[in-house]
Image 1 (cartoon, rainbow, N blue to C red):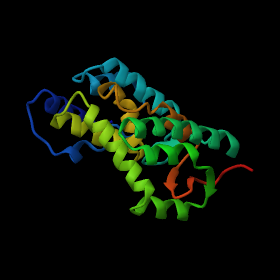
Image 2 (tube, rainbow, N blue to C red):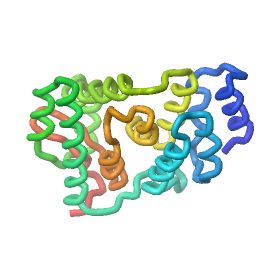
Image 3 (cartoon, helix red, strand yellow):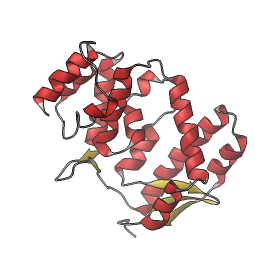
Length: 212
């Protein structure tokens, strides 16, 4: 970690300085030390649990020579599909709580289908079910958040850039939105190399590098 950036983070959290959210995007890239994590989270409610959850994410992946944390990629296609189904069940619960019965039914009924990365990327870039589901997830988290501050926004930015993954960041900050979504099934899916997208009639899971 950049010691100067950490010092600036502490000043920012103490209200002694102002910065744009993006300024701290690299704060946690490459960090694995529990004491450093404790320092980063010290100004936030549930700091010990935030640190514990950050360690959960780090244990589910590896840095290697990559800028972003990479999933462990353990298990075969069947294991990954089962993890995807568990994540879909949690999303169905969230959709029901959000007053989205049609989306809830879709999430419970769609098969998990292996697909090439190109099809998955197209689904994630489009304005179809994957995009709508993402909006529902975002709304659920933001409506349940117990903290809304420039420091919280900057922390979200830093956590996103651990693995370039919004939902892993929200797994870490779940104690700050306790009534929203349980992101533990997503972490279990991600650590297996899981990437998914909801489309009409299926939940696509990236097939690249899946064992047969």
